[in-house]
Length: 60
Image 1 (cartoon, one colour):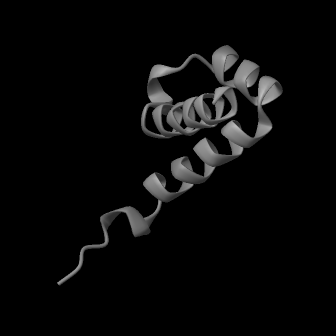
Image 2 (tube, one colour; image 1 turned 90 degrees about the horizontal axis):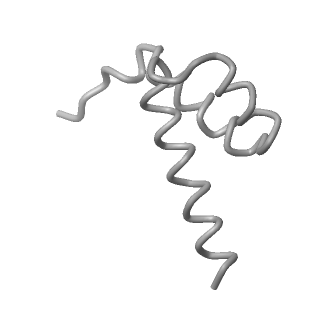
């Protein structure tokens, strides 16, 4: 079960980084990028979505 716990932690880290980019110092973001490129990639995709017009879409 360690693998599931690690994968779950990585997903939460991506989410936290993605929504809280302004709360991280650039050095922290760089350290995460070097330590786990997949977490960094997932967070960066979320940053792009949050900064784009897609973020304001609503269903009617």
